[in-house]
Image 1 (cartoon, rainbow, N blue to C red):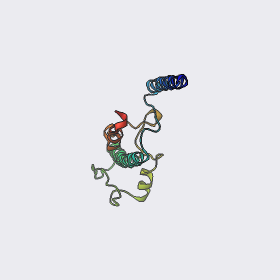
Image 2: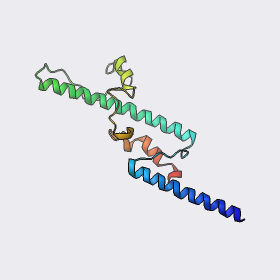
Image 3: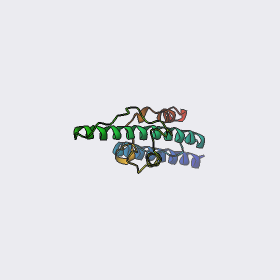
Image 4: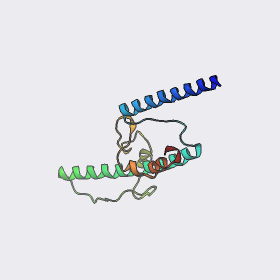
Length: 142
């Protein structure tokens, strides 16, 4: 019985240390990763949602960059071209060339959403995506 109490005490101390390290890392870096929180199926679903967000965010980044280029051309006195302010539709060949599709899907692409230190993607509504809310809503996190 005494040995069982010692093991429980050790587990409790380990959890306290891990929690302290987690909080320190979170405070220092602004984020922390905890493994084993989601099931494999939940991870699969979350990744699908994350890819959906990235496709939309890449399209938004592409549209923003194109508009910025057009605005610069206008300021430089070049001939106005017709602008299409709508976002390109996924797999719509009338708005996206094959090269652009390949570029959009690459994290090294100029169309990949801008990130901040650590690869955090704070733009294009990332905090309110289906991905973010799916992860936040897992019962284990409450």
